[in-house]
Image (tube, rainbow, N blue to C red):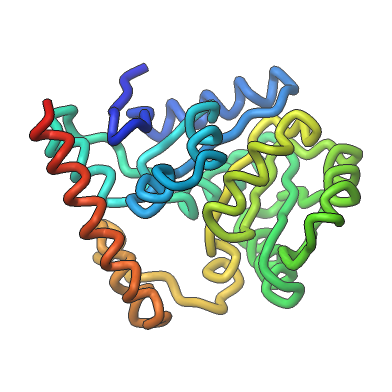
Length: 242
């Protein structure tokens, strides 16, 4: 399996079909696995967050979510990896689950958004089995109750929309106890799937600039542009050292 090294994080260079094959292999194993869809800001955060770094280093798959990761790979001479946005991967897994009778669990957002997202997923993928749901507004002392519920339900997929990097760290901390074959953080995907936020038009998504459309809906995200510049400088320094 080809891998791309950005900073001290390895990104798996896989095509969509290969990721689906890994997911089915994980399900057959009946053991817990974590998939991380990485973006530039997450790579930045690894420097100051040792727990997130551990999650990345121990994840079973780390995929290129953002255009920044794709650019960095090309700039560093690794070639162009397939870009696999988290929301697209989640929808792809839901389609797989509906067709092969796998089951899912949704964790995140608040009640109305969560319920609407589940309703829309069932409409989009007839036959999809959602075993359980839980909003993302829970405290640390409620972890045990949530873990017990998920463990007892035994879903094949766990989609955690409780914010990044909280989701990635929460999954990593609890992966063994969850024992869900495919676990992944999905950022704000439930907001988009529910319709609370509109997804960018296809031309934005295909060009890799979906984030600009998101910025128009949530202007507060403009502060993250500084993080993107920091990421670019980090990659430039990495190339200079090489």
